[in-house]
Length: 480
Image (cartoon, rainbow, N blue to C red; front, side, top):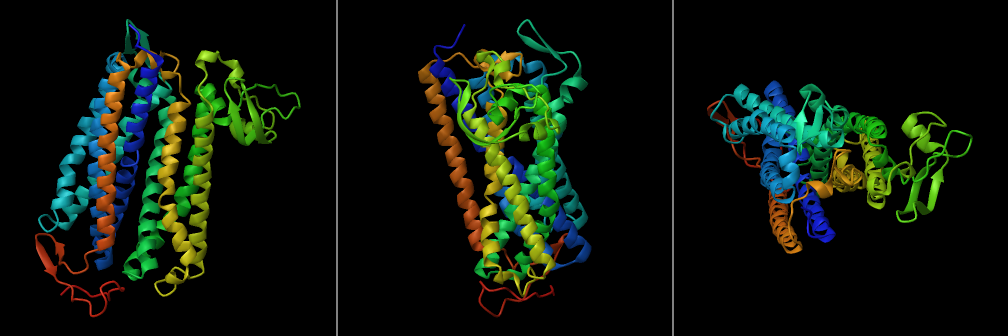
């Protein structure tokens, strides 16, 4: 039985694209921010420095908001599998269902237990136990991402299974779980989460410094974040290149779409594998209407040789070619952002070396602070465009080379598809507006500098009230 029309298929695809696009902005910040919260709390324990405590409690509030939005949209996405892709859910159940079950047991339930201690345990459990809870939230959020990405990676490079009698039967669990895409895609995604969190913290801190509020407190968060980004940003670029090599080996049609590479040339001295900086792909004509190209560069990027052969879309049947325009430009936006964030991190490191990120001097770097605020949004766009590249370039396959999207979509009318699209859009927008409303509310209010610092089951004391404007940088006062 086929769906009623191509329009219903298109609407179902757009619906799931909307759901994943709105969900993917939350889990990476949860993963990366959990790591940074563990670091700041650990530093507080080691140094007994109040500023680390204040930073932990402030960014923990933003973490809680983001975590709640991620859970709400994540549950919705799992529900959407059954609604929008019923045949796929049934066929892939022997592997896909097991992996999601592992995620629930080993990550989601694990995280749910410790996040309660992390949020509500202040002053009720010992400092070491609270740090242990924060560590487990950090670990479980990464485990959750690992299982979810493993399921998606298997759809990209399905190994260890055979498709028989309408079901994907697992023949080798090790090969299925450790599929080629997962081994590279998970580190790439995990580092993206850390990079997002670093620039999120740096951007929020830059806003406070630019406003002249709690400068000493947020100067510390900004400086540590930007110095860490100097390491993380180039590592992410390297992992992205490594993932591109995996795509070349296992999804050559996807790579050709990402590069707007329509024709395959042999290594015969021609500028055969030029890299298109920009172009206007024409799927119907099987060529680019125009392009600005660097000769030989695509070969250097993808094969690390001057005249290596990179397959073009002409090597694949028309029905098995992905659309080109969106993957082509979304891939370039992602890459451009990756390098832009690296250059911002280098800018910050240069300022730090020159002593311009000290408490006394940091407010003078107004253009750098503005760049950091802008950069806080760039990782979100990079994750969006990276995900669009990954999913659209896989088309027409739902499970690459084994099941098409048309075969896996639920059988529904155009009216039913529109109903679910509208319903999911309203829900996701409600969560999005709610999350950003509370983000803005917490950031406008600022960190709590007056409440008692808690240790174990007893408060240590109260800070003395600041003697000057509450929006100015409060003096550092040890607890009584």
